Length: 130
Image (tube, rainbow, N blue to C red; front, side, top):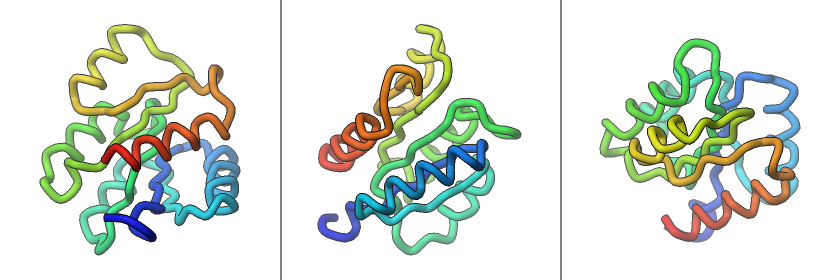
């Protein structure tokens, strides 16, 4: 998996303005973006996708299924279990971080501590290490 396959980023974020801003920034940087406003929408997309994303940007708090439920479903399916997941959240208790990392999330970062460019660098690192 290299070249174009490496450039697909799924963004699961229920704040549509934020999702739109993230999508614009990633697209301008040469990524193909799969925007989803819920975990259910993302899982539905993945169940029929022919090309998997290289990395998933996941908001922790989503309407409906939260990140915990999403990651559990993702890891159950051998077609999607390998995809690195970076949680980008407004809050993170140590307990929540540990729980998500134990489920197989590769990074858990706080929105407030990173600029969008920094998060993009992290996504790039996760794509390379996958």
